[in-house]
Amino acid sequence: MIKLIVCKNYDEVSDKAAELVLDLVKANPACTLGLATGSSPIGLYQRLIRDHQVNGTSYAQVSSYNLDEYVGLDISHPESYYSFMHRNLFDHIDIKEENTHLPSSQGDNLQKNCDDYNAKLAKVSIDLQVLGIGSDGHIGFNEPNTPFDSVTHIVELEQSTINDNARFFDNDVSKVPTKAITMGIANVMAAKKIVLVATGTNKAQAIYQTICGPVDEKMPASILQRHPEAYIIVDEAAASLLPKEEVKVEILNTANFDKNTKDGTVLIDFFATWCGPCKMISPVLEQLAPEYAGKVKFFKVDCDESQELAMEYNVTSIPNLVILKNGEVFNRAIGFQNRDMLIQFIESAL
Ligand code: GLP
Image (cartoon, rainbow, N blue to C red; front, side):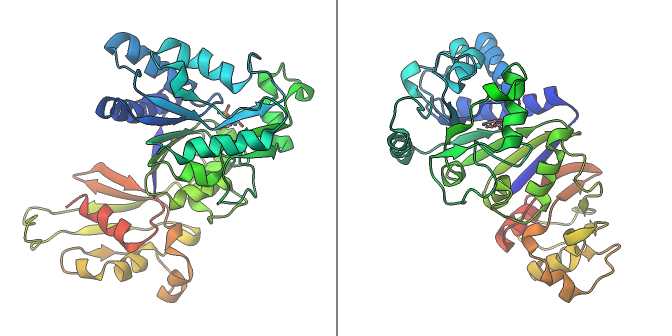
């Protein structure tokens, strides 16, 4: 299930992402982090560094595994991901070098490097994976059409990715490596929690397809709809193609509701003023959660198509449910994969 958080700007996106990472590191000082490169997580890393300096949060027991590395750059090259991680994070916190891991792109036997990295990943469980997203929807360097069951592998980068990343290489596309080693999508999905950060209109199309589109290997990040706990934290520009209207679940009256006996009255309003596959949300919810009929009232607004048509759409494409309580956003979630997730979401407000 995707939990979407829309923030005003890059600073807020970075604050929110840092909050999630810091909550984990404070609760579990020996946690395992999956880390990403690119410009998107730099603000997050700056906040971790600041917090380490000011509050002394320690990374001495933390282990990290990075997503990817360019092929053809020595690790001492300033744009190698090894250099990036040291410059932007590792050199400023107390993480131990031996606990930081990146796939190696050095030497002649790249397949062995992939196998070695997979063997390492197989022995650990990543608690939280940080992700950025390419404008073509890639995560790590898993370009469109990478199989969802892929593990660490060598990739030929798409021209769009090479063009996007030329800004780190004096805007000269000929200097951008054409190959990389990346964790596969199955490795990414194995993380317990995922935090994807994206900002800017350049990412809006990929974010729209990730959240509202079908789960399809053509759009690698769309697999996150199937992850149990994936946060997507975006600014308003990256969210600009998402449907403006949200499906609102409003708890109108909880006065008589007894949490233990579950009798009493709770009214939930669904305002489904959506276009496309999402607009049939009310009937779908009624079918999915019939036992809430007595306690929860489903109103449908602006749903002008039949129930059959609703069921034609996969419920996985329900995009954005918001629970409003006393006029305030109480909870929001995206991409319910099954009934249990929906019930869990409704119950969170009861
Ligand atoms: C590279 C990295 C990705 C990253 C993407 C987006 O391709 N391999 O992990 O998500 O760039 O980068 P940025 O955040 O700079 O837009």
